[in-house]
Image (cartoon, rainbow, N blue to C red; front, side, top):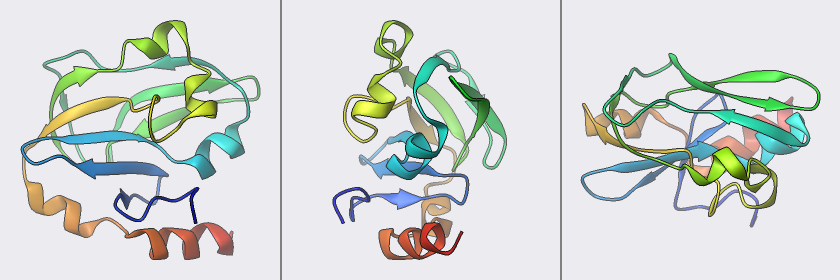
Length: 128
């Protein structure tokens, strides 16, 4: 299942989380970008902003619709992927590599354990 990397954790809102030690990297899944269609604009928070689990932290605009991004965990934004300003198509081309959205210093690292593993996420997306 190359479209759902096994080392990541997943939220019900189709965000992925990569544990990088003191920080986590967050983006949207291959499934989410394929449902949205061609991404034309990405709105992200600023470095220093606090994000809260299950609350919107930005949005992705496609040709079809605008979708809010929901924080999979709470924490402080320490890095933002500015490449998406000029190249929102990275979300479609490379959702797990080039199109990460933010790097966050988690408020509570154990929140990651509440997220789905790849198998659970695959099961969820196959059901709907």
